[in-house]
Amino acid sequence: MSVDNHAWNIPVTRRELLGATVALGTRPFDSQPSSAPADDKLIERVPLGKTGLKVTRLMAGGSFSGYGPRLLEFTYRKGVRSFDSGDFYAGYKAEAMLGEWINRTRRRKDVIIINKARTIDPKKFVDRLHEALEKMKIDTIDVFMFHSIADPEVVLDRDGRWRKLKDRFIREKKIRFMGLSTHAAMPARIACLNNAAKSGWIDVVMPACDMGMIRNNAELNKALDACAKAGIGMVAIKCMRGLGKAAKQPEKAREAFKNMGMSPHVAMLIGTLSDGRFASVCTEMPNRKIIEENCAAARAFRKPFDARQWKQLDEGMKLLSRATCSGCDGSCQRAAGTQTDFCSIARYLAYYEEDGKRDLARTLYNQLPPHRRDWQGADLKAASSACTSRLDFENILARAEKLLGERSA
Image 1: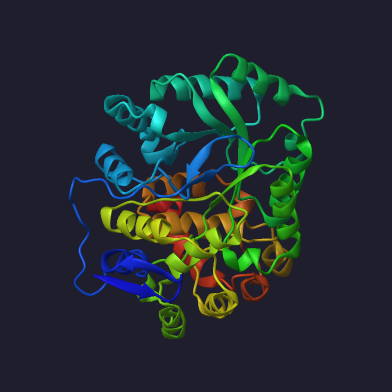
Image 2: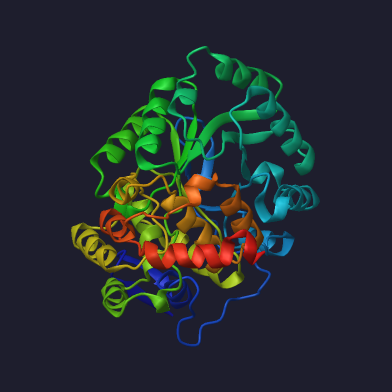
């Protein structure tokens, strides 16, 4: 049976339509995820900037506890050919599991692998690359990155040390390209992107951004334009972060996205692909249902949103309730008169409550310097009013202290 999808103006099957228009974490009507072993149609591969690599429009993240060969195989069969990893993902086991699956199935030539190092120290960066190669049991990583970089000066590489390391890694065939991911406070994030565009040696960037901040932040857009003009490949991350389950969104928000014919999560995914500057969206998909829904949406995507759909998305995004603020610009801290890291605390709480990453959330929270966790005397109401996502910091910080503090362990 085929139906006309008025949202995208393309014919899709009922199964694809159901998968592409239902919120992640919920199930439409009587639909059930398929466990059939047959491969689905490959998700479209598109150029990753000027690297020459082609990535699927959907990239599988690996930072969740249920990660493993069964979900990797299911993700592959649903059309994904691009995989993101990191040293601490899935309890420090993701790299080994991804590598074992790739080697056992002999699919190395068919997939793109991105991996990262959480350091800006050259020696540690080299050691981390060797560790990643050893854990994955592969010879070459397609794109090796600085993970969550926050220092724009590093990206400029004024003394040329990183360019030399990159050239060495490529010569030794340990990597093909280098890049960075960033979800720093917005001013630093924008500066990192602008400097990447100027650098001449950064090949790929993975910025945290969703369509709300992209469509409302002129400076971020200029930075993304600069990267695109420089031929840097771009992969969006955290574009659905903090949305939680669609059923828990305010009624007006649910109704707005229902009128679009898709869930908030799918609308964010399709909106990001519609932007045109991103080759792919990288997202965690911790179960088969979410994999099917995301893959169906990415597979069905052919045309960007039209003017009417962009207007609907803009209106719907204003009604959404969020658990995190991925577009933090420090306004909350300035309004509250404190150095409390509101943005990170909210993100770690979401790791705990939404993602089930309880140990990781507690570890990251307690690694924050004491003054970054101290909000005594801070004007939390002022912080919430200044927050670009209007987060309820009184509620969030109280829950964080209870669930993530040392006494909770």
